[in-house]
Length: 225
Image (tube, rainbow, N blue to C red; front, top):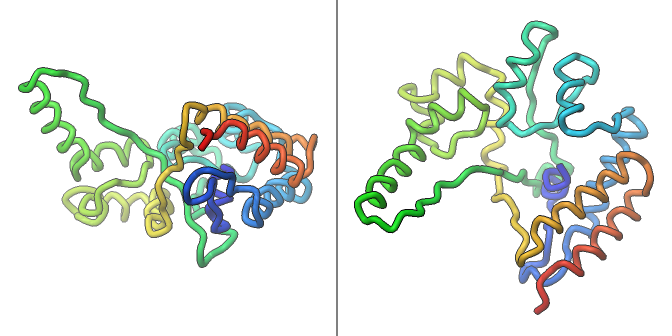
């Protein structure tokens, strides 16, 4: 969620050469301030991911910011309990703001040439328009194939008949690649940002304190130049 807010404000995680922290500038401050306002002004509760999802589908909280990949399960779990709607994520900077994408990958491990050839053919098939026409309705993910998104042969009619899936599709022009931190400490870096963002949610730190602490810790975890 911090990524979406930071990139939505036009910010960057690290400098261009990935040697220094970039998320603790004005854009990062705006991102943390939004989280603080959600707590103070909107009454956002402190939830784990699972508890937050359960509270939303039970109708106990009004908004949920979630990956598009969870849409199908959310629709199923809400059922007819309330009028479910989807919307594009607002950008702090509507001109320069972007949204992060996550995704999946195919890894081929065999050394056998015939198996490599067969696996590669399947990978291309799965990543093509047919693959997208299977994955999107079952999850809510945005298709990785433009033909699949527009062609009636694949998902064109699906989007017309399932408006809840259209919010993700409309955000395609704003997408940028998921950011992966360099070096061997990528997971620890991510967790550091998550932990400090959580301090703002539980109000144990101010937005600036959380941002400064996250930046200091991430600096120590980045690879030495």
